Length: 376
Image 1 (spheres, one colour):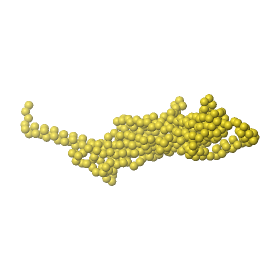
Image 2 (cartoon, rainbow, N blue to C red):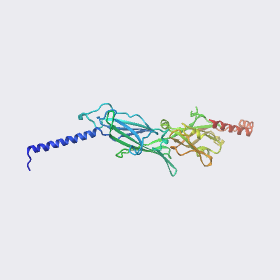
Image 3 (cartoon, rainbow, N blue to C red):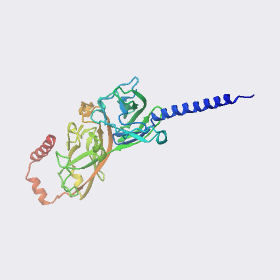
Image 4 (tube, one colour):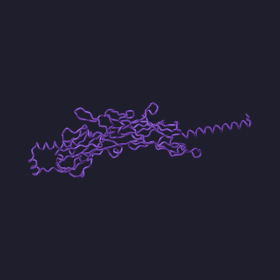
């Protein structure tokens, strides 16, 4: 088959034109492209770094936060999630193809979970109770997009990422995994855990005692404070209650807290109302005389619960014990401490002092001690 020179030139010209059109379309798509975000978190603070092209100028990028349904079929989140200002791209737009970079700029989306209000937003927050294992889930959608510039901006491209925080509340305050799912089902996972610390403190405050190593004598009032660890404090985590605590020395044990309330032996004072939603919990105990038989140390260990926010909701449980309702996120964490004890002096001087006071007076003094503590 033969072609004329003019026909060959026409075919060649058409091929070049098609390649130019393809290149123009490809370049236009590249200019408005959005890469999958680089996800990072620190406690309850989250960030999404979106790579965009050098064609994108300041003022074109934006973001919004919706519930798990995203924009289509969902609703904007106004409670429980803090939308911090977008960290925009550098100013200026590159239009020269020779200098163009498809991932030359970055826009950062910084958001935070507001621990004081997240539990009130049932669109993004829920709790589960499966066979006694308590869990919480926070689900929200970050929509990042690019608009045209001008008085009437028009959205050109967007990317939606669904963030799912699964919180395991039955083994300490541990964020089991954080799933980030944009359109292409990219998944990032992370973990965060909070614990509590227990220490001897002064009644009515969370101030540690000046000399925690000093030996205590028989009849001493021992006050213990429990608060979240440093990470928990920084992230706004609050206390919920002290679930249980027991003093132990060798074969001698004494229950101080059981089922979230002071033990029935009347040797511990604990105000669970003041504890709920507070910065710290506190209880005070007087130990059995058997703990002071010889000089040494007594140990204590227990479990405490934390929560999002400061809401204090209490209800009555079977047996009259008050406990927090399971409507807020809470997690349990074990803690322990040690106290030095001095041996009881049971010689003549001790007997003379005991003989100088009636049993009624001694009992009243003990009750008075607990009355003072109950008012702190």
